[in-house]
Image 1 (spheres, rainbow, N blue to C red):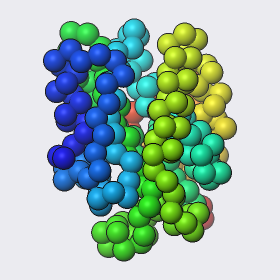
Image 2 (tube, rainbow, N blue to C red):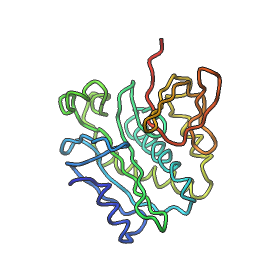
Image 3 (spheres, rainbow, N blue to C red):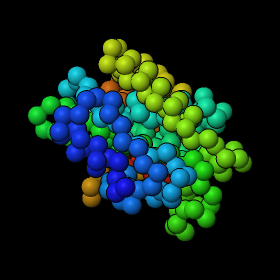
Image 4 (cartoon, one colour):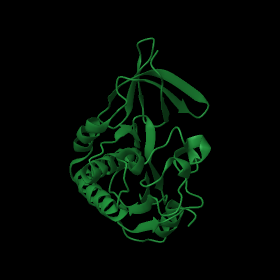
Length: 236
């Protein structure tokens, strides 16, 4: 399969209902945020996309990425005992290495139809990753030291997603923000934020009520970021 997100986007535009899922054992053109390729060897990952049709203003769409990050982190923790950290907005990492990527894309321009794509590294060994990722990516198997059954984990992720998404639609972002803060690994750290050709440096000091990352510059100015690629900087 080329990309579960691409297929789900096409289905969303055709009117398929909320909750429709596209699942793959392998992707030949998987992608993550910022159009990066998502490497996924056969039968070792969880690769799926889900159609969502939330009744929210379009400007709140970025919050769904945080919802998905919280749900996936909670599910992994519940199912395996491994507690991943969330790097804003929704990358899951463990001891500094990427474990899971999440991509939210809009399917249509008339109504708010979103596609939520999730890729979890489950049973990869070091050699399953390309050389350029072997020192920056990890898998649940590498962390746990044993093979992780994928179907129960997928079921737990879907259950957690349904629970958190329904709560978000009912009560808004505050409950999700509270859960996000239980898994975050970025606050208090020095960060670099890339937005197009611009870069910003500072210390991540908070998550706003709307899900924005609050960064304190070296000059003492606070800035809220609703989007951007975040890199954790090494402490001097």
